[in-house]
Figure 1 (cartoon, helix red, strand yellow):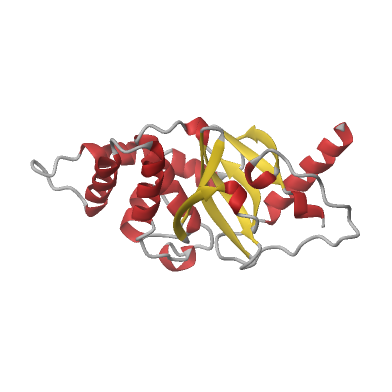
Figure 2: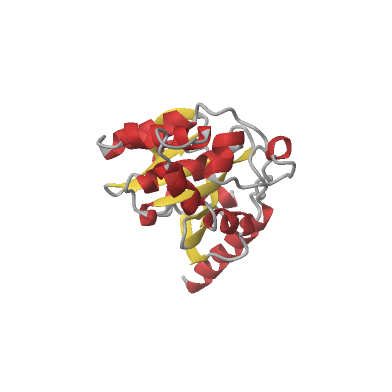
Length: 231
């Protein structure tokens, strides 16, 4: 078993290195001669998970350094006494209309609300191939898949969802053969997916075409190895 865990960890790290930004072509599957498929795990999308500390993720580190203060400023802006930005007004609207709803209704409200923002590639919006936007940047300029996930993460955080139960997941969409990102939220021992390509909020077990590469919250990151990774 220790040898298997070591092998899976090495494979997971190699998958992290190979991941590109949203919409980029995903890496090809390893050939069948490498090894047989591994058994389903208990992690997100039935993967095997390996938790580590937050390191070597400068895009996410930059967001963490700005997002909380930024969203707090949006929330306390008083439109009757000062000029509030459109980003602040948009932020206040979704938070206030979601307060008092059931947790599942809050997930659906937040997911649907931010999915209205137009999708934009990082290179077109921010001038670089891979950029993780803060909620304020997203509300003003929009962005790609991880930017939707980040903004939803902070909105649910403001609504009282525990950071321990949320992760931004970078993954491979095997149907479109591209890299993608979603937000996973754990409730009642089940993880639900908030995805910018759909307003539906479903269990992670419903997404057999999603192969997680790594996931993060404010404290940790997880490497993932999926059952089909070695086919």
